[in-house]
Amino acid sequence: MSHALVLGGGGFIGGHLVRRLTGEGYQVTAVDTHLPEFSVSPAWRFLIGDLRDQKFCSGVFDRPYERVYQLAADMGGAGYIFTGTHDAAIMANSAQINLNVLRDAVKIPPGILFYASSACIYPPPHQYTDAIYEESTAYPAQPDSEYGWEKLFSERLYMAHARNAGLNVRIARLHNVYGPESAWTGGKEKAIAALCRKVITAAEGTEIEVWGDGQQTRSFLYIDECLDGLERLLLSDSMEPINIGSAEMVTIQQLAEMIIDISGRRLGIRNIDGPKGVDIRTSHNERIRRELKWSPSYPLRAGLEKTYTWIRQQIDVKQSGGDE
Ligand code: NAD
Image 1 (cartoon, protein in one colour):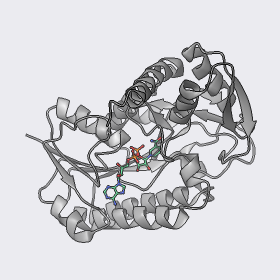
Image 2 (cartoon, rainbow, N blue to C red):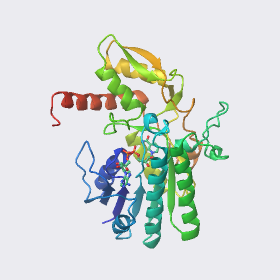
Image 3 (spheres, helix red, strand yellow):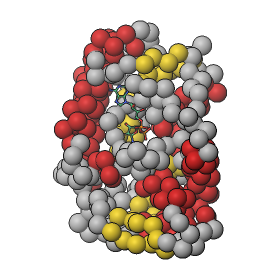
């Protein structure tokens, strides 16, 4: 049986990935500081510990895995990564994890080592052109958050180990992945989950708050398509960092309106000051079309309906005291 290792297997993407790999017949080792919050992990073994601890990390690399997915990172939505309050922790924690992982991966090289980078490595666009967020526009580098700088540094760290230590590395720059079983409260939730929660919990006839003027544009990738893209990437020989994201761009205002529409509720929108990130961010998909012969196509509305329904269930359970 093939062994796969999912670092960050208790998180949103990691939790879904463990399920997918197990379903495909992999014997999966998942690693995280905690078990998944919203479902039971089907992992063959789940190792709980801190990957910043070199000794613990070395213990995880106890066999030549066919695949290693490195998803563990200190991350969250705009409220976590753009306020500045968590900058030192975000950089130090994630860099330490990646340094530890590479030191051990070199000793027992996996068949493929995947690293999850982010669209946040791109500089803010100075003007809108069709080529923004094309992979090469990462340089000259000017990410707008320390989270983005750490991701860019770690991309280079993985590529340097591919060159110097012969590791078979794949790197995806993920763009706003969403879906059921992502954080929806507590400070680390991202835009879609936060907006769904606000729409569900607002009193009828009132307004929900949206950070900024709502004119900032984004694209969002449904979790199932994210995993489809990762599989294609791992099966390809694409060694340079590549975008995995949707090109269906919406403004945050349109996103909020869509979620209100799905809810069937009578709510308005009030724009307030808050961390909003860059004005435009989407995925440029020419390279994945060319190299992976694939690009995402699942409609945003369909993914939002599933995510909204899941968050409403979570809130219903909480309100009925079912999680206590
Ligand atoms: P997540 O926060 O749900 O998952 C990350 C997991 O890493 C968490 O469960 C966390 O407990 C674990 N972790 C953090 N520090 C650890 C440590 N020291 N030791 C062990 N485990 C630790 O985030 P996610 O949305 O699933 O993202 C997974 C990866 O993809 C991250 O690297 C993230 O930066 C990247 N990414 C995600 C998105 C997105 O939209 N979700 C976009 C771009 C990049």
